[in-house]
Image (cartoon, rainbow, N blue to C red; front, side, top):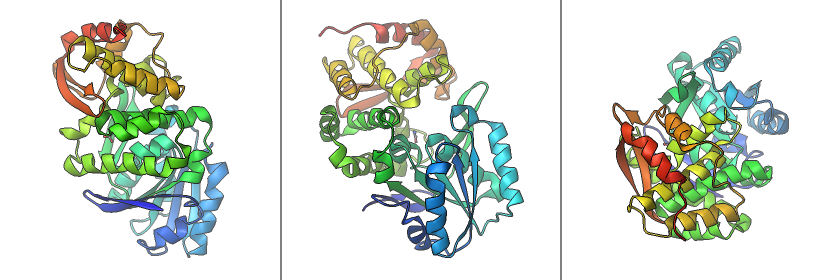
Length: 355
Ligand code: GLY
């Protein structure tokens, strides 16, 4: 098992290894005395894994209850939050108890935000069951719900007490869901780890999955420790996300987050090359890595639609919006772009680069 320690408002370990679902009770008991545990999950994940986690907790003296809501981004809304809070109250969960997020990013966000506000804060543990959630949303304490006006517009920074990434679960994901995580891992490579990028570019890295998760989580840990509340460096993690979120939004979330980020990364790399910011060939390298992992590079939506979607982004501050531009593989910068220039940026992003 690999352990990455995060020192943020709360200090906690991210454990990465095989069989951690079965070990959940033992690992949690190292830091939390037996209490009542509310496992929050969705109706895809709970039938597969909730019993294993419950048994493991019960063996260590915890009592458990499980609440599963419908899987998918459509659940990341205020009505689900309200149902979860009522459920926690019915189950008489108190601040001495524990909430577990068992699932992907939506579950992590819903459980984390519920834990942040129920009784003004209950301890929570993340058990991400997707590659994407393991290397991104389960670490760093961002929790949020979507509003009509856009994604992640209401939420809280609230760190977990522990994160358990079971690589048996992650490596058995359906290909499409696993590849969402690959896009996010490629993002870390482009941001600051050329070796990781090269490893992912081969498209053949399952044997090194534990190391790859450790590399991504360590990079995220370093960034979060420097800028927990997202006022500067943490915005680097949004590489590919501004156009990516716009693509998700245009598709009414039929295009998954990882696939949208893949396209967003390719688009912003092309724009960076056309603007003379990125080293020539950067977009091609990113395209090759994405292609090798069967990730998309293009979208059916027009640049003007993507630009309108990008302007809904929460990274918009007044008349500017921050974009992350690659300079080359392993090095990126954050630059403010006036909103009046976003349509032209999207036009550039859609243009092919010279090969
Ligand atoms: N997912 C981006 C962040 O945690 O800041």
